[in-house]
Length: 190
Image (cartoon, rainbow, N blue to C red; front, side, top):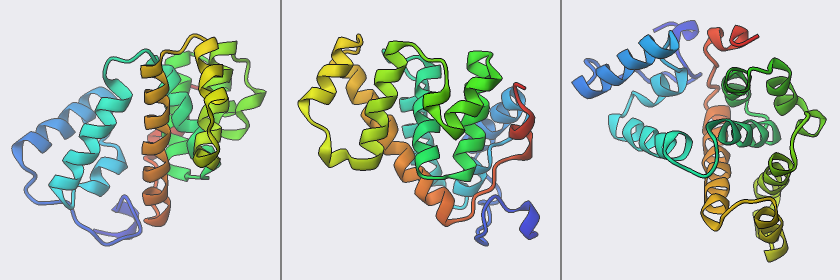
């Protein structure tokens, strides 16, 4: 595989052939998204790692939650912006644009979320997410109380912290491996 075709700077090849369940998952991605996200292609060198990644991602980002899909994507972009993760800023910035129907919101989330027009709930959520991403050991009860005042349940607070934690990890893996966003993300929902 040439450097241009690899999802990361590492020379790791996808398992070949892919197990039937993985092939089906990739086919669904291709059908629904028009691509297989490079993060999935990157993890496909080890199917157990890919399955662990997708299970956690799907639970945090797609399962039932008091947080909307848009709110979870906003958290992903804010954390990725703090960590300067090129892959996740591009991919999840596109998701914010698509889910919100507001291209400028996706751009603001990547560049400076405080410049975005947000409601009080979203602002409280992102203030907390930013603090967890930058200095989780400094979170105190007053920070959680501010979220409760904004209408978040304790389960929602767990979900916010979990999304922050997941993207803090994946940002580092993506940056350290030179993961490249799929080119199609750049033009989505504009």
